[in-house]
Image 1: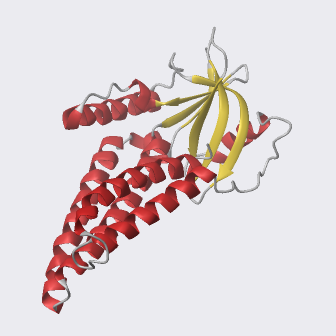
Image 2 (image 1 turned 90 degrees about the horizontal axis):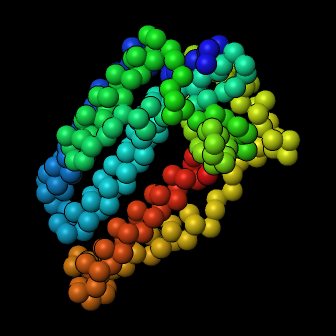
Image 3 (image 1 turned 135 degrees about the horizontal axis):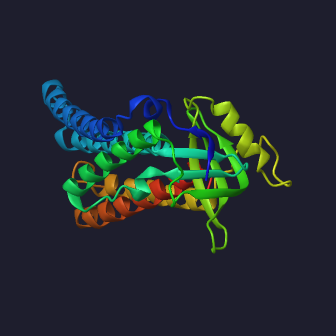
Length: 259
């Protein structure tokens, strides 16, 4: 199938450094979290703050920061790995290159996967072609604008299969991104406006956020530094807080992506 235009992120179009951005981002986040933890412990001891209470506050703050930075990194790498293809017969396709990069298990598998993703992005930039696993954007159902990108919900179609819902990201730094947005807007269903209202916060985010806040409050109250609740309840509450944090992050990420 002959291609008319290909859209890639600015970094991928020049010479992809996806592996450096992905691995470097992870290493940078881990190094920052460790530096803040060590620095916070040293500063608390230097200032004579209550040890247990200061460590609890530091752990919560560093965890929240690490999760926020991790979500931002994931969003950036997702946008960089997404490629759009427009054919001469006016069909639009999209591919998240990570889906064909063969990620393995563990750290070695992750490094292999990001390396393969980088190779595939460079190959597509040098020799554009339509991969067989690319999804055709059959119909766009919603578009949501965010500071650095657009979240696009669409029905994907492959030969011999029924359309299935998908979500992709369009980075605002993508060269000729305005032309891509026009192609996506052309495929919006009639009952969807070109500039939809911001998505309301779903109940799943509200409930998981409330559960997280409640679990964190119980952890604080049962912590030895506070002692308002029996200390034996601390670790069960901590486990509940971790589960609630995972659910909240999952639902919030889906909400941010417009799903």
